[in-house]
Figure: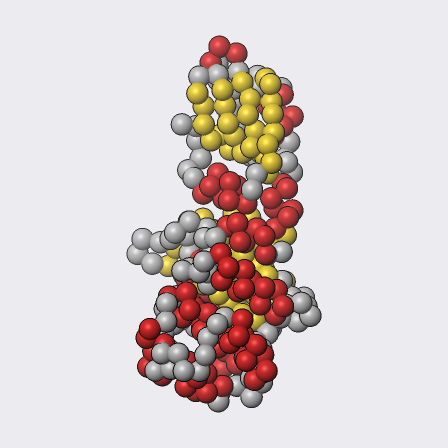
Length: 295
């Protein structure tokens, strides 16, 4: 089995929003970043994976398991960390750990102790007095110490400083180093996503815009600047592979897909002084997330 998560034809309808049809593939052993604007459907997709809500169409499989028919086994082998998890009812960190530990025979005590040290947590810490970032670390600890085969994280670095983020991603990289475990991260921290993930998918308006290896996705696109004579427009409408971002008189900025024939098209349709600039993932995200069309 090469893929840890496979989503095919997924649809979830609301009164003012529809997720999908969505096809998404997370390879086994990958750290996969799921990105998109607020309201794009990222959290909806994650919720559906874990049976929080019912999809209107399509199929979700995790480790070959159907997300509804095999829900119990799926939740045994996969773990979720989200911003709404709250362990305050257990009072102290140690009590929360002992409670969760009892449900998972594969719990790794030595690993749990190592995570406690790395995340600067102790058994006696009162959960109610932990900072938001420390509570996030506790949630990660309770998920990681289970040694799940799939770990799904919804905004895991919210509230973490730079040092804490480094600690968290160090542990996530360790978790997947044997190639048997998989991490799916939904996050707005795009510099972290570019640095630490090896695959990425982007959702906009409930649809998957792109998916693939992070380095290949970033290398595929360029910011292109060009000029036209005396403020004249291009001779023909822009083709697929070229998104016009801004036009100021005769100076144009656009997003260019290097897998398309858009650069050759520019050269034969009145564009002059064409220059290409490499983008970061965040810059690519901003360009793709905005509405198309010159301003």
